[in-house]
Amino acid sequence: YSSTIAQLPPDPMFGLKARYQKDPRDKKVDLGIGAYRDDSGKPWILPSVRLAENLVQNATDYNHEYLPIGGLPAFTAAAAKVILGKDSPAIAEHRVVSTQSLSGTGALHLAGEFLRDHYKSAGETAGETAPPLVYCSNPTWGNHFQVFGIVGVPTAKYPYWDDASKSLDLEGFLKSIREAPAGSVFLLHATAHNPTGMDPTPEQWKKILKAISDHGHLPLFDSAYQGFSSGSLEKDAWAVREGVHNKEYSFPGVLICQSFAKNVGMYGERVGAVHLVLPEHDATLNSAITSQLAKIVRSEISNPPGYGAKVVSKILTTPELYKQWEQDLITMSSRISSMREQLVQELERLNTPGSWRHITRQQGMFSFTGLTPPQVAQLEKDYGIYLLPSGRASIAGLNPSNVNLVAQAIDKVVRN
Ligand code: PMP
Image (cartoon, rainbow, N blue to C red; front, side):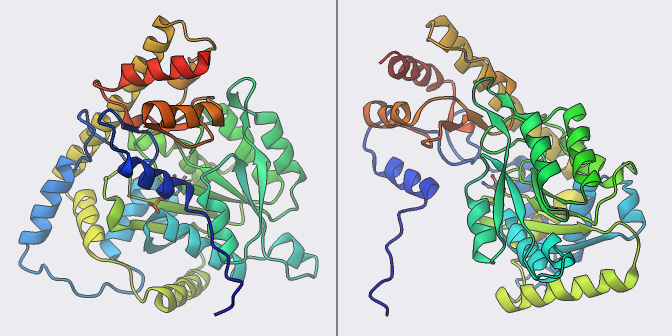
């Protein structure tokens, strides 16, 4: 081995989790990882998942055979309908190429490799062979840069969060779209932006999508939290469906990286899909793209994992289970909203310096609290409360028995 293999620091998220697990204090609170917890702070197996698991396991044809390279066809077809809608014209017109992936991360990885090898970037159009440039929001989920970096796709940042107003920097975002080389890729968080919890309004989305279309860019929606913002799968897919179905826009294609980790709570089963929506029906192109995606999957993982895909496709294709799932999403999203409200009420009751209402304006699993890195470090050291140095807190880690304690600790570190 080379003597120069560098020791890398632990992953910020998984490193935080390891410190939390080692902490012997009883009242410690994990606001790090984006995984849903119930009112008693425990992981939650969704009732719809339990029912589906029973059906899958008790079926006479239940086994652990390999799935096809492209995944379970019933799953990928139903997954496309969840994000694009049951009556999606794009699906009806056979314009959607779908393949199963290792959850959302695997979908992004596949999308990155596909873009690198098959998408004509601005540079290539100009006679060079530069890979496409993927623009990510500033800030974004930290792994985005690493996932694209490892497959050799360069990334850039577009302004997103305005710290002063604790809201979306729409002007900065639009300017960056106008100035990016034509043919760039804009990575958009479909809903429940991670880490800020701040999504564009429908009017703002229209401006963003129009600008991406006018400047010849390709939108890539990262959909990891459908159902977590509003509790409604339909409402949370609004931006994706607007981009795909509104004929005012014309894109070279729309990529969707879809994760079922959070919205069915099967984090470790790695259930996801990548969908490429083509601008028009082209059976030859569709089949060629399918074959290229299959080549990547075959060489990297041979075929995707079966169990989670079977469970999720059972939920998606069984009307009673689908209804139960919709109910489960309401249970999770409304518990998170009520924790946001209680946290802010307690901070207001304590007259904690600063304004905190942005926490209830944000949605999804996370809040960008505005706490500074030293305040975050003090929360961990003095109170056993763990969140990312950026001040991002996973609101799912709050519950009725710790929310006031967390507010009181925040009050102390802010006054310090
Ligand atoms: N995108 C975003 C924005 C995320 O927050 C996450 C999970 N933290 C993912 C993608 C991927 O998650 P997974 O691979 O577990 O589906």
